[in-house]
Image (cartoon, rainbow, N blue to C red; front, side, top):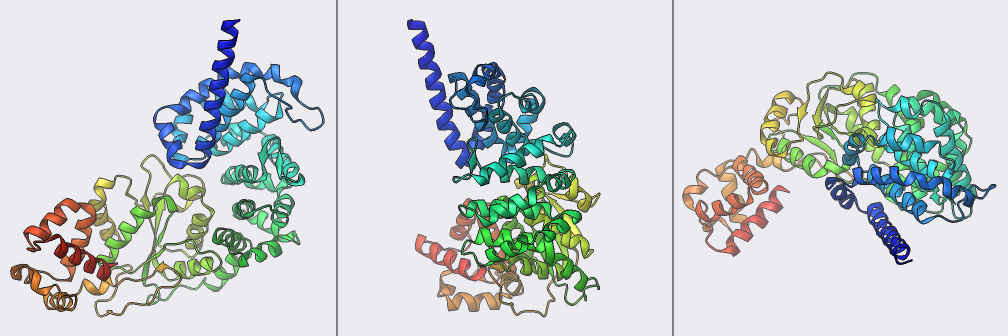
Amino acid sequence: MKTSNSLELSQDNICLFLGALLNYSDLHDEFCLECNEVGMVQLFVEMSQELQDSIPHNVKYVEPETRHLKKFTVRGKMLSRSLGNLHNFSRRVPTRTNFASAQAVNLLLLPLLNSKITFYSAKSLLVLAYLIDEQNNHLIMADEEPINFLIRLLRKAIRTDCHRYLGFSARELAEGLTQIAVNDNNKKTIVKSGAIPILVNMLENAKDDEERVNACNTLWTLAFDEENRKEIKKDEHASAELRKLLTSTNNEVKNAAAGALWEIEEKEKHTEDKQQPVIESDAKHVMISYQWDVQKLVIQIKNKLQADGFKVWMDIDEMGGSTLESMAKAVENASVMLLCVSQEYKESPNCRSEAEYAYRLHKDVIPLMMDGKYRPDGWLGLIVGSKFWIDFSEKNKLNSNMTKLVKELGTRGKIELQENTVKATVMDVVNASPQSTIRSWTCSDVKTWLKNVGLKDRLDSNTLQRLNGQILLRLQDLRRESPEFFYSSLRKDFKLDTVFDVLEFVDALDKLVE
């Protein structure tokens, strides 16, 4: 009896632990990545395999009409939570190499797709949605049933008052469908299986903004296929519902709706208008196209390019609404596009819209590799092809890679030497920078600036004879790259003796450069 009680207590504790882990992994990217680092993907794959023997014992709890599980055995609940954690891990791209190492697709997930209990089949499919790539898509989608199954679940979820079915929310089901649709081979199948009216219904009756964003993103991703665009246009409610969302106060909703409309209707109009070559004098800037997870690194690249005299267009904030219009103009007036390539970039409909529009307009493209383990495939592989690319995945080689990039750019996007005016930016988009003007400052110009900010008499006179605009900008770079050396140089070379002098100089430099 004591042994039985101990076993039950142990199982209950494991269930509680798995539940807590499930809540954290659902919400926190960093938590998932740390779990991945310590081998928890492999652990949960093995645990889920061992727990599959609980499925026959749970079949008796399935309601024949609704397919709901009325309750679980303890091991059945452990399997559910283990698969839930695998689902959360799989949503974070860096974990996926460990899923491959654990052979999760063949050993666990594909067998579970055929489970006698629909709940476990659905759990398996939602994990598989994130593990599909160009190499294994044919294994997972050998027939249309997995896609049909997911669409049936979404339809049933939307019909309920709480927008949930078998414990799955409409939001996470639509998100899984979007992920499957990243692969171009699946897009037509999804539409043929009747997804469009279901997604439009989801837009019309959404419970919250998260549902609206997911429905928009799924339509946006499906619309990259020409035949699908025609089918979406045939739906009399689709465009009207998307247009309603352009006035949303939620920028994420607005941006997703605008993106879907761009692919469905606007892109063709823009392309027709812009088929003629862009006049060289209009193609003035370098445009950076990137996914938000690498923004810090991309801002460093942008700053260094501007310091070297290039005019750079980079979207800093997802503003929604007219952002797609700004993007279109930026592509049209770009002399060259820098594509910040990664798996996340490939999966982003926003990035694909930018890259494909540039491709349609025959823009020059330079790929910047953000993930050393990823090699472009699918639609991104077609655009990047065999182009010369620069590896920015190793942060310690930033300066040497910038040298390669500047050499590759040549004069494309260079600001004319006589151009000293800075054009205003629109909607928090970086379109030019005062750095291009500062770079041309002489030592006399720097002295005038220091006098205006009250610092001229505090700096070493010998240092002032060598301090021009270009060195000012390199100082700011040095501050980011090697802060310890930067601050010691201010004391040693600039003779800024007190912490107050140092802080005043740094503040003045920030205001000037940033």
